[in-house]
Structures are given as structure tokens and as C-alpha cells.
Image (cartoon, rainbow, N blue to C red; front, side, top):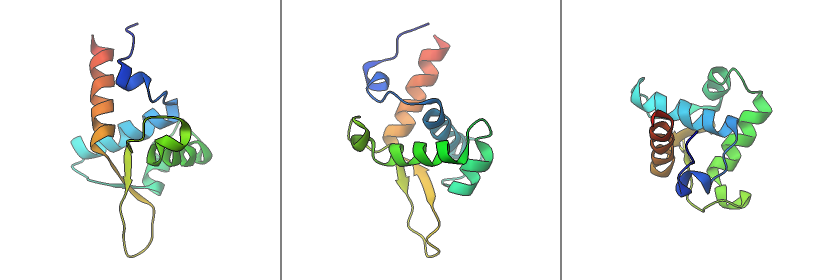
Length: 105
């Protein structure tokens, strides 16, 4: 197996965190959908519990609080209903693309 790049390794993401990032990246690429709600993430992330998804989202929103580089990987989208809605940040997309490339090679 290839070694992850320093950028990927710096984040030390869990499986649930990777799944959240991949779901948001896929939503943007395949579904042409800019955002996903927490309910959609929980529904799509079938291999992880609600608590795992919630913890993953929280750590991706504020990676510095989890001893990671300070660049946020997710962005909360403000809305009138105050529902938790998220969009993948540019750094999150970069991380996913780098991970996909390292898996391919």
C-alpha cells in the first residue's frame, strides 16, 4: 500500500470522517448537489452510527480542535430553518482527490 501524502497524513481521518467527505464530494460530482443535510449524511453513511457521523462532522468542521491542520474540511451553510446543512470545503475536496489518486496508484 502506498504511503499517504503529508497533506493527507496530517489529518489522521477516521473511517467515518472519510465517508462524510466522500459523500459530500460525490454529492457535488455525481448528484450535482452542493450540500447535504445531516439527515442525508446519516442516511447515506450506512456503515456508521449517528453518533459516529455526528462526531465526524464536528471534527471536520473544526480540525484544529482535534490537533489537525486548522483548515476546515466542511462548511456549515446558514439557512432560515436552522437545519444542519454542510458543503465540502476546497481543502476537503483536495484531500479526497489526493486520497483517490493515492489509491489508484
